[in-house]
Image 1 (cartoon, one colour):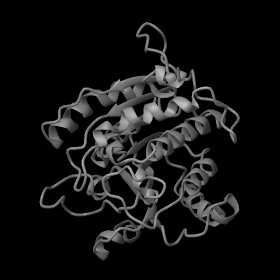
Image 2 (cartoon, one colour):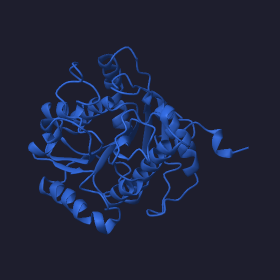
Image 3 (cartoon, rainbow, N blue to C red):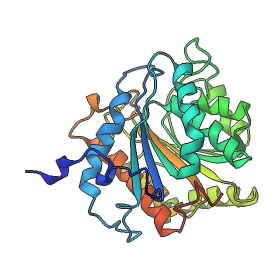
Image 4 (cartoon, one colour):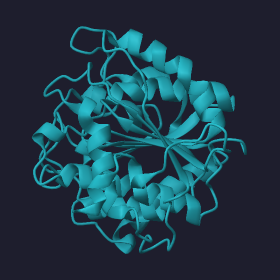
Length: 316
């Protein structure tokens, strides 16, 4: 029997014991895709990512030389209604304060509309706006969601309008989709950084990406090293690496590029991350789920290696 199929939790995390102190990290699934605009199915992403993570459960990270296995509570998929976006966000918002106070949280989506309530809760908890590093094929700065006021393509502009983020410390990586110029340039016009997929073509290694990494670090340092949130839409990857997503866009990043960014930026003061838009119904050979699991694993290993396991909970 293939032993890795014996668990449905991320990295085979044991059942949460409510009587025991929490482990450094918490992980929860957000099985919601009611705001998708093309192919639905991201509600099944959390479980696919968990399943793919089974291959990593006994692994020491090859760069950081640590393993987050045993350091994680998998809280399962949160109970969220599928009746509508605002109902989902309200139910999620009610659960967020206790979870963020308890542990450094990682979220498995779900579509990208789940990020806005996370940023609202983090802004409230920290008492200050956040820096954001945003991997995506899409700018997510549209003024409406195909006639609706909010969705998975509006959360960036909403977060800026609500003062949840530091505009100058908002960095987008991998953007390449079609869209009106006002939306594509929105983050840059508000003072943030955009590194399009075209900008990054042929740049994979730490040395090749060093100038980009340096710009991100310099921008954060110039604004007092604010807390950083990481939002990773799996469609930042080229469909060759991640076919299992609702809105695939050719010409995207490679898995190696994303891993280089995660590894080289691991010591930033991250307060949490999400990995969203994995839609396993469109996946091939589980490529997308494996990439997502590896990105989350690398993020967690980086937090451990850099001494930031508690940054998202009691130390801030």
